Image 1 (cartoon, rainbow, N blue to C red):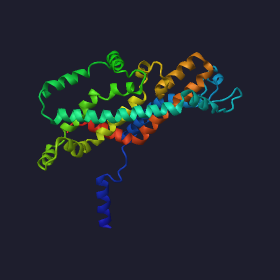
Image 2: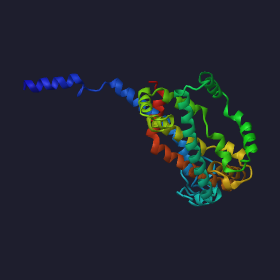
Image 3: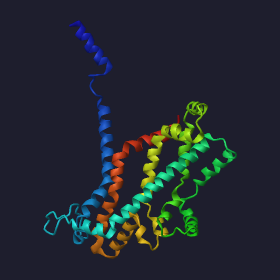
Image 4: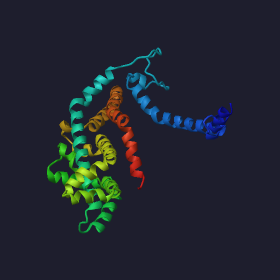
Length: 304
């Protein structure tokens, strides 16, 4: 009995069976309640978008707020033909292929070139490195919209306007990505690189076989964000592809559908259905790779 009593006391001292503090419980409940309300406020517009995409034009513009698609009698009425019409209006097969080509090629080139530039600034002692990198950082202060006209002039000179290359070449480099990759390489230990050099490895081999795998978490998060940015890039496609709809991306095709929906209320449900279709790949990517996104953000925000 004495042994059992002592064991029970030790458990209580460790807090294993202590009663929970009512203040802590109330604080936790309030925290989850606030987070739940905020999450609902963020998600609710998308819920409305999905449900409204199954409505008829009359139901969408009917006075009063109705979340679910219902007819005049109040019965549920899901109009699936909206998605059939949206798929046809978007020309989904061609524009989806164009989008994947642009996103995959742009992301791959962006990662490899920015990683090499970041490694050069972090590890290679070339002439002018100390004064060149501040100029690179200063370029981050220039708003991206200001570079639109210079990029258009360059694409016009290269003859890439109205081609798929106009969506790739201006975005193969990112100053922000170069900065993040430099910070990642700066945090690596030099011993592994020095040992590889002593074994006869060159700079490229050291970079690809030793350094690049060590910063793979940051490469993943930059790859995801670069892919998503190229996927949703609409303004540049509007300027760089003025006439050739054979190389339109999903963002550009959806923009045309939105314009049609504004001028013709009967096509409004198609516009909503097209928005849902276009957003699905990004939602799938986020839920599948969210742990890598969080891991990359944490690695980028903690200085070792």
